[in-house]
Amino acid sequence: MEQLGIEPTLLGAQVVNFIVILFVLNKLLYKPILAMIEKRKKEIARGLELTESMKAEEEKFLQKQEKAMEKAREEALKIIEEAKKQAKDVEKDVIVDAHTQAQGIIARAKEEAQDIEKAAQSRIRTEAVSLALIMSRRILSSVMSVKDQHAFIAKQTKELRLWADKQPRT
Image 1: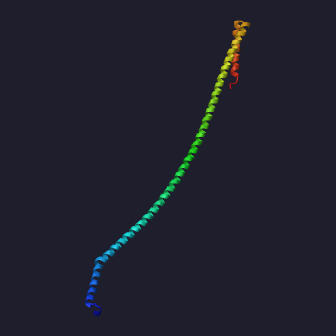
Image 2 (image 1 turned 180 degrees about the vertical axis):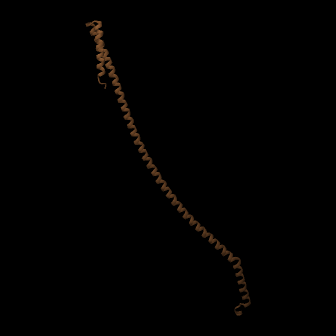
């Protein structure tokens, strides 16, 4: 080896130096760097797992939110339908009440008209009797004495009143 320019003692010393440097670098630099890299890998993996779980949670939340929105829409539609139904019921009740009130008003108006008619008939009868008395007095004053006139008028008045009371009052 000496012919090639390699000295065995120097080569042995260099090999020993290389092994020592390799051992020192391995202990002081390589293992801590590998440990730090491994720790970083674990943190990255944990972050990815957390990200995936957050995405899954977000997806679940969105699904729950969508279900809640759908349920709220359905409930809103039910409430609207119920309100429409109640409005129709109220409308029917109002119409029935209005018809009832209208019939009551018509009945009262008919009764008032009948009362007015009866009152008018009574006044007409009274006036007819008064008119008959006046006419009888004028006619009889020329034909009978005053005493006979009073007796005849009293008799006829009595008869007219009885006749008027017997007449139907519609």
